[in-house]
Length: 303
Image (cartoon, rainbow, N blue to C red):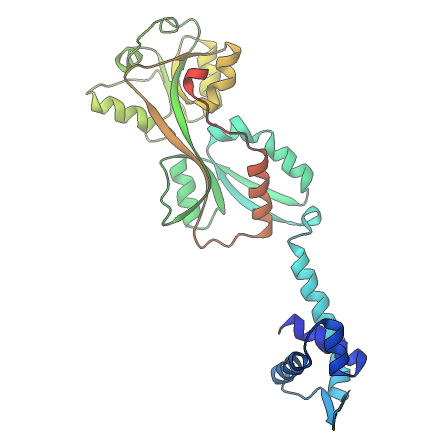
């Protein structure tokens, strides 16, 4: 039922005149006539007595006035629902890899909750592969991934950036002051890495396979923050996205080790599957992320 027809009906009911109603609404008289005919057809009832050139509400029309007012009020509330973000209630299901979570979202979640206290964020922290599986089974609404570039045929990429993956070490490590470090130099160090297939580990394994090299990590753990703390506390070498390592390198807790024969990159992406209905709650969250998230990318040479 067209809300415009209902509003026109109420004005006609108020003025008891199609011409005056048309003038007050900025319509032609013929447009008002057509709108009333459409409304009567939808209801299957006549709303007006038409005697000569005069029209007047009949009993059906009189009874319908209260219904029309109630429908218009309900529809206007519905249309204003998305705009009433301050009082909006609901939840969103969000997946994220832990490296981006710790680097960027620790400050964003509290700010979002301050702005929209009635929207609950259900956060799943996992690997990109598991998050993708959960999105496909509709267990999650959307996600921030660090992985290969997802295809546009299936996904909507709201934000995307290339993220360099670098090696860092404890300042006491022998590679900290060495020039022309190669990937083969790295594999002889005490390494802390993600487990195979997790995070950015596959990039490292692919590079080793190209060179017929093999590495045995001292520690394998699927938590970026723990990897950083362990590497900063003892003589280890690890690999990290630039955005995760940035503050630690700048503070001197870690040292960036440029590798002369290796250049690894991934994509950070805020994504959801095509065909996913974006609720007002989800759109507010997306808009907040785009506002508050800093650019993740920084050239390794600037560290």
